[in-house]
Length: 95
Image 1 (tube, one colour):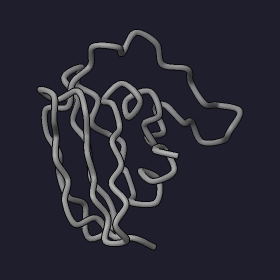
Image 2 (tube, rainbow, N blue to C red):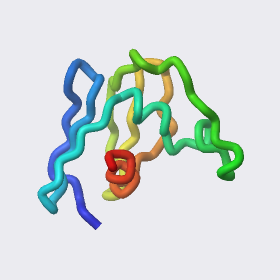
Image 3 (cartoon, one colour):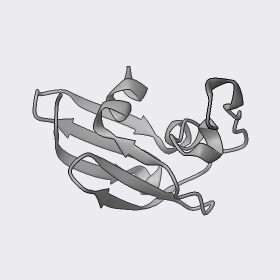
Image 4 (tube, rainbow, N blue to C red):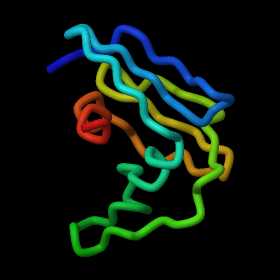
């Protein structure tokens, strides 16, 4: 598994750029990160419970908190902050 070497919020909170130690750099919009949040609030507790999140075109990232060595918590300006974004999940979102 690739590990991040740099995590940067760009475009006034609209983009998250992550460079990995295998040379790959991914760029994810804050909207994509918000609507695909790995939180139970969005994903539910089973695939059939996944909730469609709409109206997040203008959401921004206001903070990033490290969670151990395996993930980050992203805080959005709409108050959402319960998703833990693991490194492999971020790579998956970018593909």
